[in-house]
Length: 482
Image (cartoon, rainbow, N blue to C red; front, side):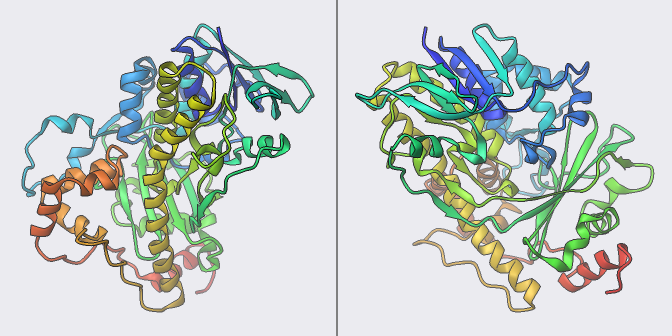
């Protein structure tokens, strides 16, 4: 039985352990963080799990339709555990405009769901499911420092820990997240590294968690899985979570000193109340905060060259999740893509069981094909958003959306058409929920025809406060004269 050593025990590593054990691998997960305490409930874990090694775990998260589909098909016991622990399935079609064409229920609508769940709740239940899986073991407090490669063909034969221990391995999975430590391992082993592709995310995130005092949702979910929007000078989005919790995430440009007050509770609350759709959730007697405001700077979107087909192949080494590709968390796709990637990798290894260059190249191509569309979309949308937010901050005219390629519609045209056309709405939602790539969407002639037939674009949703008024509201709330 081949041993798979997985470096990293967060979502991507846990999903990889579950997937690889399912095809007959013996799995050893090496995780640098301590073992999670034995909480009696998922709620205790979600509120008490302090994880310095996973700072993004304390930020707002959502599990898109892709993630729900992966769990439903590949790990139904995990999804059932999440549902039993208080994570609601959110029917996205409730956000379909009531007067839109084709608004009647369609067979494909059953896929249009999201899971309301805090990251820690998802991760602790996934951890327990993997821990209880036969053939899987964990070693906490252990970090992989390098690879031991066979001198003849550079095939993986072991990992070396920071303590100097050599751990034999048939294959090694880099699930170290945004650090993507396999790049260091390869460099130290003298293997040339393929170049990364990167694009700035241009995002500072501010998140606070709340608990509802009743069970009914205080207002509609205009995004299906949340409330809010990416506006012309900031982003404000609310996501329902497990156990009647919700999170509010406010996104700004990094270094936007005029909105530094968002770090304070009063400034954050003032901004949230000024965001369309959020005020009913924060009304007296409706909810109460259960966390401080937590701030994080998002890393650039990155498509790792070491994970793709341009990399000099090292048989037996694979990158999963964020170690292969990072996209802007504002789009909420990271966890879902990590789950999908882990099971796709296991499928490929089951089909090509020989640990050789052919297997490695096939995995690199699969990884590239999976992540490239989302990386390119993230970079393109970030480029326009950053330019618009910067123009708003500088008081200059907002740039127009770039001209589409050929006869393809712009994002604004698609969003406008989705307000009145159910076919366009479904296509757009499937893309936003990671079920269909932009290329797949534009290959649908019916979708394109409906977009072209839509009425001229009306006014796009915008916050009730412009940039200057929004800044004054935050400054006033934190006690600073505007």
